[in-house]
Image 1 (spheres, protein in one colour):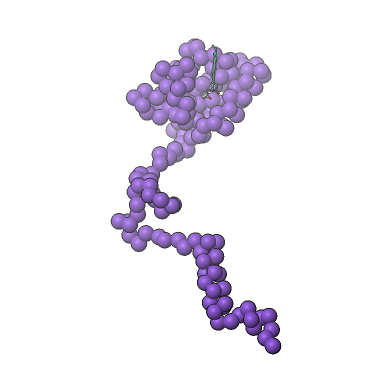
Image 2: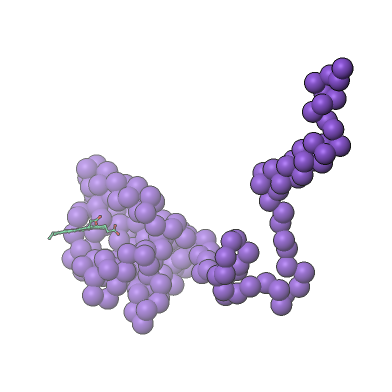
Amino acid sequence: MSTLAESLFTPVNSSIILLILYYVKDMIFPPVSRPKNAAEVPTTYEKGYTWMPAKHAPTVLYQTYTPKTLVKYDGQNGERIRLAIDGIVFDVTAGRNFYGPDGMYGNFAGRDASRGMAKQSFDVEMLTPIDEPLDKLQDLDASEIENMRGWVEHFTNKYIICGKLVENDAI
Ligand code: HEM
């Protein structure tokens, strides 16, 4: 009389079990097909995950800015938009509706917005001329400083930190 193991592992059953294991392995560890040369790398979406974007997504480098270099990022001519709060430079291009040339807070684009954020005002008087030393904010009271830090938190959660702001003659 044959044992259970003998009746399970007949040559036919064993082949079927091996075939099943082979397909299950492919399901758990799908084979990766890598392009062999540049011509094989797809540039458009086809199916699955074997596609590449036509060009690299824009990257933002962490840099040191001065008021004079930051002002170039005022969003004019569709360029990127950056602003500083409390010495931290944010790339706020994603908020173009707010900071673009026609945006409600367009004054802050390319500038140190610390005082305006602290005092909750987008008046031009809140901005320090770009050829003057950085605003030290020494006259602000504790609640204004706290308000500014609240904005730093909001911007940190929403935008890209891309640098720090230093005096014009520091670099
Ligand atoms: C007339 C008064 C104001 C109105 C009606 C108003 C309206 C708004 C609205 C609707 C948003 C968008 C909120 C969201 O979608 O998350 C916003 C965001 C904002 N507001 Fe105002 N606001 C006013 C005054 C001010 C003032 C005086 C400042 C000065 C600092 C200011 C600074 C901001 C900033 C920095 C944002 C965030 C934008 C961002 O997330 O990039 N707002 N405001």
